[in-house]
Length: 123
Length: 109
Image 1 (tube, rainbow over the protein chains, first blue to last red):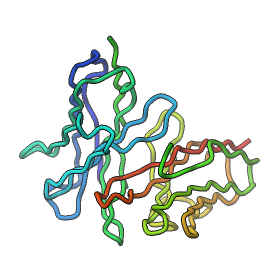
Image 2: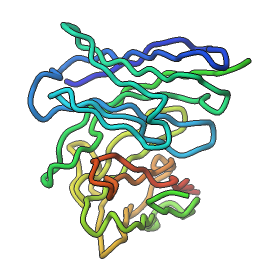
Image 3: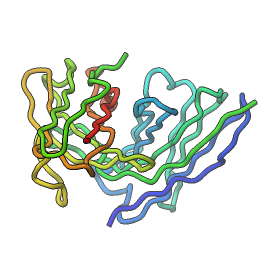
Image 4: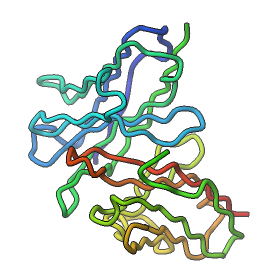
């Protein structure tokens, strides 16, 4: 059974760097074909895809936030970390990590979600 | 604006058929996926690869596509189906980035 759980600060100050950790079980990110993505949902807004890391350490970022995001895997641990620099109150929201699998056309989709972690950015 | 466009809301009475659309150029070549998000919960996959149902998803949930539009159909909607529904696909950048629609609030009452 695949499970993921997000952790990190609930409150960060404007301009600080936000670091979120995704701890997972039931799969290995070293296995070919696996990916872990981060998605956020700002209050009253739609889901927003942020970043994806593949089993081979290849990475993808949403263009609008690419300069502020870094997704990495933690060596020897079943964890993926997302850092977001220079946060602003508009970054307030719930952040989810999720297991990704390839579809039959080899594009990746989210098949299992974590429960999410809520982050508030305040001055 | 979003690469995938959904109606903000759909409302049906219990037992009626609810249809939620998702349109976008990417759907001409990429699959559509649908997620159900009940209040206060994380999203959950209900349809993948346009029309396939994950195990455990009731048969009343179905998906279809035509051209650049995908449709999620809930036949005989139940009160417990009231939720936000999000469509998802992959963008056309060649970078394999995910994209979501704006979400649709389904009200069943």
